[in-house]
Length: 295
Image 1 (tube, rainbow, N blue to C red):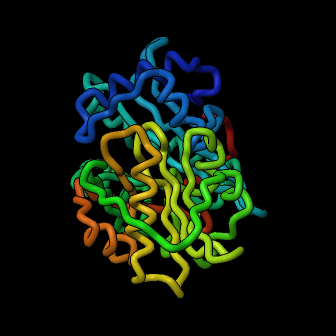
Image 2 (image 1 turned 45 degrees about the vertical axis):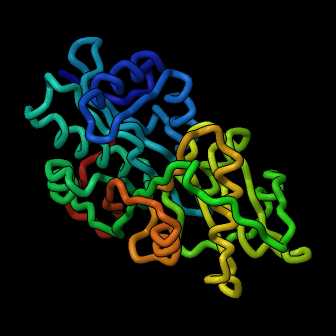
């Protein structure tokens, strides 16, 4: 078996391996090819930064890597790690993670982020051994759309999603959005999202974003001056009316945050939790210092 970059792999080859690897995953994946391609686009998955283990021509294990540059810093994201069932328990995961981190070190990446299910003990142990550290606890919430009450508001509703491009969310977000819910992710597939802005004159005092097909909420933000005034219920009501999904889902909500409290109050159920884990190359000592070469 050979570990190498996915740079030369086809979309169909990676999609097939992904489907096989996640066929028995705890969280059910229903990803036709078009949805898989959208996921890759949303998360800025770059095959040049991704890595896989091949048995001959067959891709049997992989790490799909997202890449973003913010200012002078370079960030990568584990957008999907999986191994086909028949190839598990052979140490492939450890080899793959070590080779991937070595390659990213050579590319002078500053930080790597990933999420792992809180009850996936094997994966958590693997990442801990590779020097990843838990940065925060995240929860995922869901509620049937039919149970979200329609809530009126005296404020003007702005639903022009193009306004989100220039919206300064610094004072609106109560926690930093995870990679897959970050502004870059929304803008990558902005035509798939609906936007709700709560306007007090020319000032946006609250907003939300929802995927019009899946019902996934990317962000909810409320100005500090208007928290605990019912705007959260207004936003959830408006978002429910703008998706074709039968439910609203909000993944990767920071545990203990204001928004988590409001989701619970609004009747959302927590269906799973995740650890966000990070790896910083400047403080890592587990990588070798030999000259760099492509995996």
